[in-house]
Length: 69
Image 1 (tube, one colour):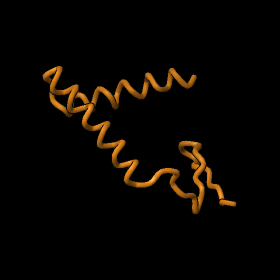
Image 2 (cartoon, one colour):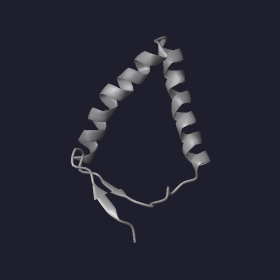
Image 3 (cartoon, helix red, strand yellow):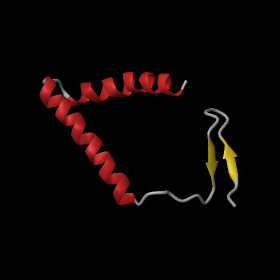
Image 4 (cartoon, one colour):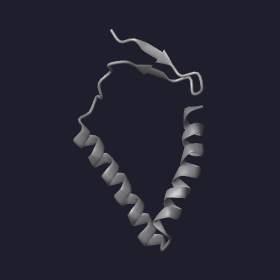
C-alpha cells in the first residue's frame, strides 16, 4: 500500500513509491510522435513551430476541460 499526499493547490493525489505503468522508452516514443506531429502542422500551415506549440498549449487545455465536464 502506498502513502498518499494531497496537493493543496491542485487537489491532485500523489503516491509515494508509485511506479510508472509504462516503460520510459514508451513514454519517450509517445512524446517524440507528438512532437513530430507538431512539426508537420508547422510545415503544412507554414507557421513557426513555437506558434503551433502555443496554440496547442492555449486552446488544447480549454477543449480538454470541456470534454471532462
